[in-house]
Image (cartoon, rainbow, N blue to C red; front, top):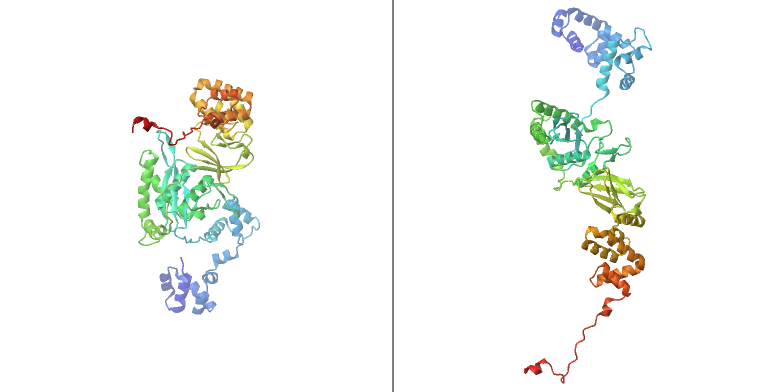
Length: 511
């Protein structure tokens, strides 16, 4: 690049010939002569040189093309940038600019492109961010999906997950099956175990496993209930980045670019591998990557900075891992008093109809909660489309209808008192399945003949005498003893009276 200021300084402070000055500055003697003539014509001094800016020197001494550029009509570069964002290209933006004036002051297309390139270089300055150690961990899925084989031997594509501590750029990566919530939770759990601590917040992308719904820049996003439960378990905050703002988690974006490149090169010469083998390969890559010296910190690596900065600032990690559960909030209980989850239906108490309940599903059970109180517990169904209905959740008319259809004695007994339920349970355990239908009809016929009050009293008396049988109940009712206390029929043991005139056994034994 031509140094006009240096040439003028030599002209004003030395007595060299024009040819000698041209050799020193790499310019022709004609150019040096022109600069000397212009300086003499303007009485340009060394003090003027010190005060003048580079742009002033350009305008005063170079002329020609520079003056022509100054006379050209400059476009509104911010408006041009907005046009490019809306789908225009540079050629179309130049046509819009040239429509206003086709005279000599209009920029050529080449000058237009150069001018926009100069504007773009300074339009968006990059801010150096200072991250507090232990404040956050940035997470993301890579765009590169490594190919491998499943347990069944079929070819598939896995997902590459990364997590970075921004203060030290200490990086973790693993391969998971998908971006579903169960794999998302597993990947985050592995990251915290790798970091050996918990940051204050987890900065993630806006995938559905982390964010249920975004609500604009002024309102916080709605966090996935299961992911929120994971953060609550470890005592950190879910803090997703704003939509379409990857710069808010720039450290992990850079880590994604570097790690996926290393993994792609490592897998290039290898046959398809299982996911466990890929994770083993990733650990070797991460060990070398985190130990690599950093150019911006002489003598330091990501691992050494992690030991100095992040590890002391991280909070202790709980020894027990997060018990994976699927949590759903605000489920409306419909008229059939069942909640749908994973294409299976589970009942809740019918008196909660029309209210919003929370559902918590683990691997083996499904819990339904209302106001921090569990109101229903079901084993998790394996068959898709299955229905789990607790008889205690059914209204009496539904329970009676079901008991009549199925001729189920235990269901029918739930419509009556505790004594009837206990006797029915004892009789159902004593008899086999073939006799349960006739037993149901016998109980129901006897109950219809004597009424609920007498039948409950007879069952209660049979339990007190230790004979919870239908035959015993029928005898009690036939004799009208259902309201009598069995203690009234027990003769108390009376101790014999003794005095000095009564001879005892000892008298006759001669003792």
